[in-house]
Amino acid sequence: MHCFDCVLESRASTVPASPAVAAAVCARCGAGICGRHAHVTSDPLPGPPISSTPMPEARRLTCELCYEAERAAAGRA
Image 1 (spheres, rainbow, N blue to C red):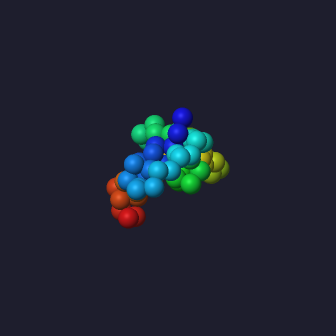
Image 2: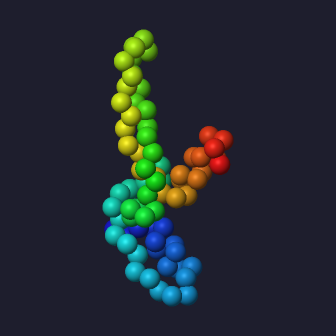
C-alpha cells in the first residue's frame, strides 16, 4: 500500500514522484500514511471512574487531513 497523501501530492505536482510506502493506517479515515505524513498523538484510555492512578495514554496515528480536522474541531486550529 502507498501513502495516500504522497499520491495526492504526486498528482498535484508537475514532476511525477513515487509515493512512499505506507507505514501506518490513519485511525480516523483508514488511509495509508507514511512516516512523513503521519501525525502521532496520544489517546487517553478510559479507566475506572474512581481511581487515583493515572491511566496510560495510547499512541494514535492520523493522516494530515484528519489531524487538522480534529484540531479544528477541538478548537486548537
